[in-house]
Length: 286
Image 1 (cartoon, rainbow, N blue to C red):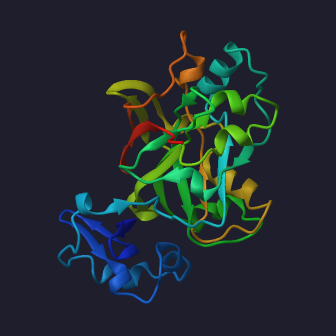
Image 2: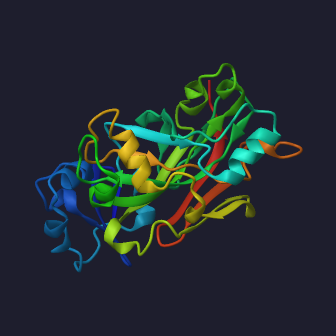
């Protein structure tokens, strides 16, 4: 099944995505959000409504990130070899480390499918990064690699929009990754059991229809079980936590000349078996 979080004129809700639209689970179940549904391991309860008629057309709602309110959002830096090499070729001090490079994002830095990414007024170096993101189902601390896949609720598309000059102000990259509404996730969460092999998914990003990034998750340096095992050593992972697994080569700052997103652009992240995440770009208003 596919699950989405959304907003209507009546407020925020969540539901099942089917061919006809959205089945509103917020009107049918006692769980207030998709995060609560996941925490209760209640997808079977949700499945009883999967064949009902849709309550909303997707075009009639505002899609939110699948989990609008995660306790944690972790991201993995330079996790494809070709991206590591392009960063080195661009003059950055990057090397292949024995452990994943982890940084965090805040929930209000993300928008959902169909919403505009916001280029902040302090920069024009607004870059794109296509990524597969994992959504945690069963929480835990010190999760062993061999058990990690059992802790996954599902997967979604992720655009780790980055303000490059702020990212490179110092050795701490977090500022460039946490501008308001610069990244996106969605359009929905696909349940883990519906993905045959998350280590073999075609992934790409298009800017105004032109393919800028194209790879496969089999090229991850640190695979998903290794990432979950590592991150769960930091804090107890919680249901609904999101982990973005890294981006392949082709990002804008490494190109000659650089290519950055600007108002009016359309950025699309597409991952096989997961979906298509599309966002326009606009400038921040005063």
